[in-house]
Image (cartoon, rainbow, N blue to C red; front, side):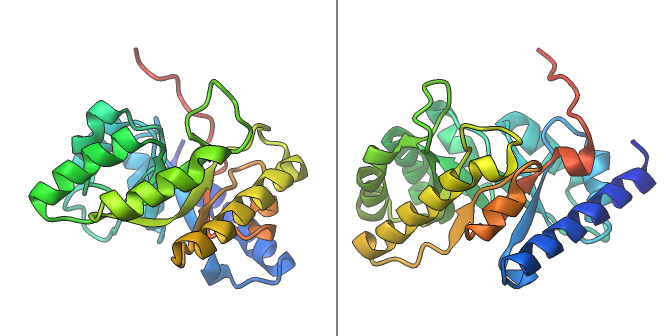
Length: 238
């Protein structure tokens, strides 16, 4: 896709996001757009970053690190990298302290692995807990009933991890309003945790290309949009 097409698609997404915030009675500044660049080229990332996009989300650890290295030192662009995909516990040391925000914390084992590396390097890592709101066996994320225990573990046993909020992938895909009850559920889970932990937990990462308007209406502070910006994803090399 040429640069002009990318910039046009990006501007259309920004217009939709502005309209969604207006409809929800919210300020545009309350919602961060995370451009999901998974499987797209570093050149495509650079083109979107050049027109002002700062936050980019990646799903695969090695791809994210390679893309970041390719763009390191690029002039006129500033990028905050987000890890939004599942992170295997064996890769905890690779991601700890590497991303602006990890959206997919989902186990004590992963948390403990990150904590060990962060303690050695004397770094802090902001994270979101991914919640499997549909209790789908094929998806990662902590089950709703296990969320409080994991959140308490992060707060009590992992001083180098900063819990910032929650993330979810609803069990319906590109379904617009059909996803809204799951977004409302995540917001309520966050609100309950706020009271339980006495933390602000400001972030709710929810909503993608097909349903982010509903997510904004339910309080999303981050929406993760890939296809509507970058187009269909190429197949991943195996």
